[in-house]
Length: 322
Ligand code: ADP
Ligand code: TRP
Image (cartoon, rainbow, N blue to C red; front, side):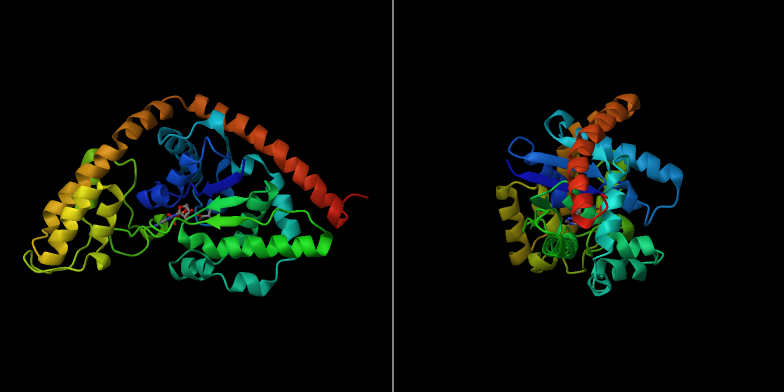
């Protein structure tokens, strides 16, 4: 069984880009892999400096995953900071990470351009992510396309460590689904918690409707033909609509007759239906937070066992055992 691992930041409400880019793939791999899913609160600290927001976001992200179908009994599911070994590995890896490798990372530059403070933690973010991946000897890492470069950094660091100190780490492979690599936000840019352009998975019906109606479209008249490939409303519909419905919509786009208002109503109904059951389940989970905490503590115990084995080996390899 392959070891598959991926994490998500509890830095805001999880959205349909997170779902199709990563969560859905992870959940569907539950039975056929040695699955590792975690909530990366230490990474979220690079952008969230509000204790309530981070703590609540972490519990909510855990509830979200379970409500969407993750069974904690069939995988290892934990909160990153509960296994602090990752910080030690991160430091060790940082001592052999070239500055140039981090300076080339787009994500750092994009985040600073969007107004996130340029801290050392934000700059070193990819090293902590490499530590996450390597500590658990992960083979496959499902992510959205925005994380591709970070995966390359993790691979480079693994290879450099292995060459310097002898075979220690599995070199991980990214898994990026072509069809959902970048889910657009309501403004057509990549949907992201930090861009304020998301459609959250767990909105109540009324807010969801409002959000979907805010999807930006151009001003082409209804009867004129439109280009489906350059329309974010079309891209979003494609995630939820069955094939026959999508064939009809495609027809309306290329031959004229696509009315954005009606299509947004369709999109709202499809999203609402898709996540209705999960919404109910999340409510129940949040009503029983002790149960959630127990699950996460048990998950951290399982994760720590694996982390300790790798870290002992690393300490030995680099000379931290005397
Ligand atoms: P955000 O950018 O909203 O903060 P995260 O960085 O927490 O999201 O990403 C969690 C996972 O979801 C990652 O694997 C990321 O690649 C994926 N993801 C995030 N946004 C999108 C998107 N718009 N399309 C596809 N995948 C996405
Ligand atoms: N950087 C990832 C993101 O923003 C989250 C993350 C942290 C991650 N550690 C990871 C993803 C390890 C995969 C594997 O989406």
